[in-house]
Length: 140
Image: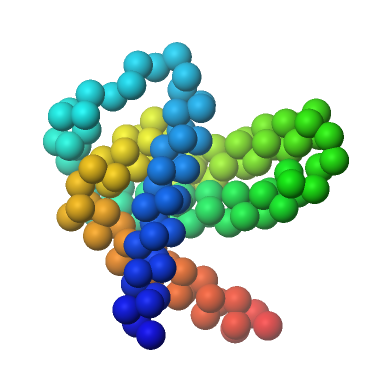
């Protein structure tokens, strides 16, 4: 069971980091793509990992919430409006976690290329998700 949970978490993390990077890139379309070698050398502090995990989990929940709304929007104009609304909420969630969107993007890209960093983040995401689930149970 734990192996399945870890495999699922890894798949979600990899996919989510890629979508997080895509979100961040959408916000910074005028910025040049980062140099792959420079991205590998990014030093990420433990506090930055904590902030990233908090932002990442919040962004994922917002994405899940809006995915169904966008799919059932009915017309493209309404779907685009919902996408813009979701992006705004995601940016706010990132800022509320103590990060700038550019730093979130940088860490996301680095984690996609650095297995050790990705593992650090995956462990913390797992712990954060468990803590949120326990908090939800306590509130019920």
